[in-house]
Image (tube, rainbow, N blue to C red):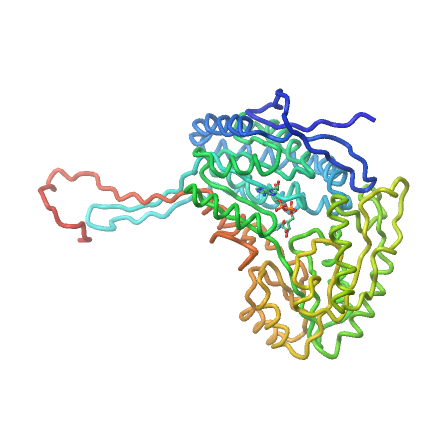
Amino acid sequence: MTTKHITHWIAGQEWSGSAERRGDVYDPATGKVTGQVDFASIAEVDQAVGAAVTAFRGWRDASVAKRTQVLFAFRELLNQHRDELAAIIVSEHGKVHSDALGEIARGLEVVEYACGIPQLLKGGFTEQASTGIDVYSIRQPLGPVAVVSPFNFPAMVPMWFFPIAIAAGNTVVLKPSEKDPSAAGFLARLWQRAGLPDGVFNVVHGDKTAVDRLLEHPDIKAVSFVGSTPIARYVYETGTRYGKRVQALGGAKNHMLVLPDADLDLAADAAVNAGFGAAGERCMAVSVLVAVDPVGDELVARIKERMAALKVGPGCSGDSEMGPLVTGAHRDKVASYLDAGVADGATLAVDGRSHPVDGAETADGFWLGPTLFDHVKPGMSVYNDEIFGPVLSVVRVGSYDEGLELINANPYGNGTALFTNDGGAARRFQREVEVGMVGINVPIPVPVAYYSFGGWKASLFGDTHAYGPDGVHFFTRGKAVTQRWLDPSHGGINLGFPTNS
Ligand code: NAD
């Protein structure tokens, strides 16, 4: 079988060199190697950054009207080719086709937001701030910026950043995950067809070597990173040491708190959707369900019923609701938590290892069915660690306060959800919970594109969230201009500090 070869996209074309190192790309549903991706050395990263530096000179001067036209054209192309892009994502990530379309739709939302860049870049103007003096503010692009993204959303996460970065007049070097690299090249070609000048959007593939070079490169002005917490912390510390703006989004352990007055069918549906969608490989997945007494038994029963009916199979099959995990190593790591949880004293209520997998040629795929642990407690590894797989843990608590305390004591603070019919409890929760994104009867509260996405605590390093107003702020620098057009009658020496008059 011939396999594909995936390489960098620099200055509007595929890189033509020969890579010193490459990585395998798999189809997670079959477990087969389907291609190799080139890993960039320092020289290739420098080439991509060089292209971004050259392109910045022209792109920063392109009119806002011109940049907006390119954005709109990209939006149209992305919309037209969403099925093709979804198929690419399914073939390397493993998620089901409808879910891949969902991530493209959420990326598209950010592109649409960025189409409004003329409005978003408008500054303020104060006439006659002092006598004869006007003051106004402008926002300008930073220069070449880097985006480093994780495997779990190969299209959406890069699109949290690059549409706004490009619309604002920056140029971009994207380093996608080496596990599912093809979506990035597809997006690069769409940009070219949309009329984006060569070098404004570049892609380098690879691993730590490429990321480290981007972090230290003097011409990279800002870094947007999404991935696991240890790497996010490292990227933040390293990038800021080199004087860059950095926003580094990390891992998560998202709790869903269910109060006794909640609609239990709604809560059970939500727990299953948010726990097992994309095989739990979402940073906003619900991985801990906190049941306030006495609803635990009933909730667990309803969740088990729904889990048994889930169709697990290849993402390209229309029947599948849940696909495989991304790699064999990741599947094995997630599966190891099943034994660890039992050893720690949790109840393995549903063992995903025995869930049937549909489809031909799946014997060697990276499968693990939906798994449920009950009576989980803090301190157990299934509670403490971000498992990032289809493993849902149920913790029983006696009261709202106990549940809130548990959530606030967790080192992560990405997303959380409350299920209740009590508006007062919901309002208290939204005020008291120490988490960046909160859902009230909504299990995956990913904010729409005109708000911003970001967690608290170990889920985000830096002080700006992704996309929305924070995204515009991150990818631009403010300038305040104090202006006077000389009145011939005015002048004279005055060494005092300027005050308003
Ligand atoms: P990861 O941290 O392994 O990799 C992320 C990126 O960093 C990849 O591009 C990878 O090549 C690079 N990288 C890996 N090791 C590195 C190193 N030592 N030095 C420099 N760069 C390195 O993450 P992943 O497994 O691809 O993605 C899953 C993780 O991402 C989960 O922890 C998940 O919660 C997190 N995530 C968070 C969000 C969020 O919004 N907070 C969104 C999506 C995913």
